[in-house]
Each structure stands twice: as structure tokens, then as C-alpha cells.
Length: 122
Image 1 (cartoon, rainbow, N blue to C red):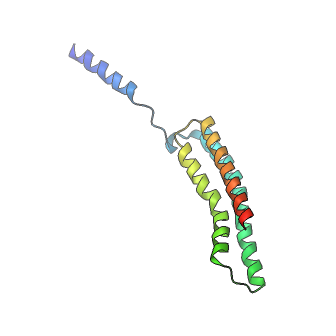
Image 2: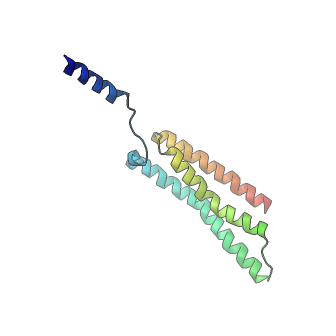
């Protein structure tokens, strides 16, 4: 009888453990969502890199030295999409696909707002 009670406790312990979620359980659809949003975030990254190259070349063509604040704005404009995408990827790693897509959409909106704010400051 103790074997049956021990087996019952073991099955109860197995049922109490939540399924382990993370990057290993992303699945194909989870990675497809991440890659799709990577292309959207890359749009802002591309704009930031283009502005970085454009601003540096414009300043150097006029022989003007770039100040620290200009460097900060231009580098932040290029770095924000990478940082927010990484944060969305980490936050979404334990979520289901619909919730993960919402996290990426909110992150994309944050990138858009911050990029627009940086352009307004510059």
C-alpha cells in the first residue's frame, strides 16, 4: 500500500510543476514572430545608422567638430532599436505567441516614440 501512496504523491508532484518556458520552448511560430519583428525593428536601426553616417559625413565635410551631445543623440538613435528588441525578446520568452506579439508591438511603439523624440531634439 505504501507503493501506491508513493506513486500517488509522485504523480501529484509532477502535476504541480509548471511547464518550463523559455527560449528552448519558443518553437517555430515563436521564432517566426521574433524574426518578423526583427525586420520591423531593423527599419529603425537602418534609419539610425543612416543618420549616424550622414551626420558624421556632413559635419566633417564642413570641417566642424561634432560635440558630445550630437554624438549622444546619434548613437542613441541607432542603439534604441537594438536595446528595446533585446528587452522585448527577453520579456516575451516566457509568454505565448499572441502575448509575445503584443510585447513586440509595444516595443516597436516605444522605439518609434523614442526615435521621434530624438529627432525632435536634434
